[in-house]
Image 1: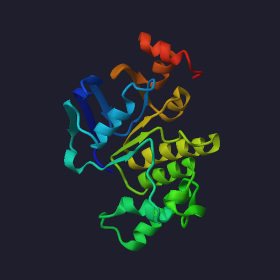
Image 2: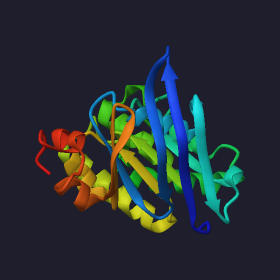
Image 3: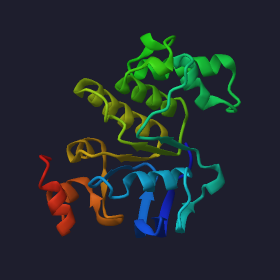
Image 4: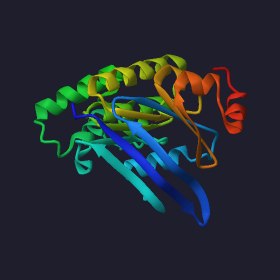
Length: 237
């Protein structure tokens, strides 16, 4: 387990065709904590995750790592909202996450088998990844996260295509994974009720800006911003 670290997001901006989609003056995220990223559609949740994952660049500002960890050595995993699936087997789809890891074939096999079992799709190990349903594909993508010991795990709506049984399973799996690895877990979710179950802290975005940030109970039950109160008024927390 890596020594504690902190991600400090400073003066971060992202624009598309001169439209500002993300404008975060300051946001601090600590390792070992579970954060839920909430807010209405178009608020910038996916964009923030992609920047943190290194999938896209910020237009201005950036992320600073504080602590004993070398920023270049942080192991970061990203599960996008639309899970990608290759035409070969589910087992191989998940094993791809361990390419270049230095693990033996036997060790990779053990990790993949365990991850598939944890997310409840071990019976699909030999099925083609491209043949999976939306919910099954999301569980396969989650298995790609679980096979690695990550420092930062970023997940974008990881249960959007799942039924309630699978959703509850995944929420438990994410909690156990964070406790085992000590990673920084950041999950974007459209449902405040899910945020309350999986997160210690909540970050709420509105029009690309952080409008709420703090203890999950406090943010969900006593939002201080007009945007936060409006967003939560549509949900039963």
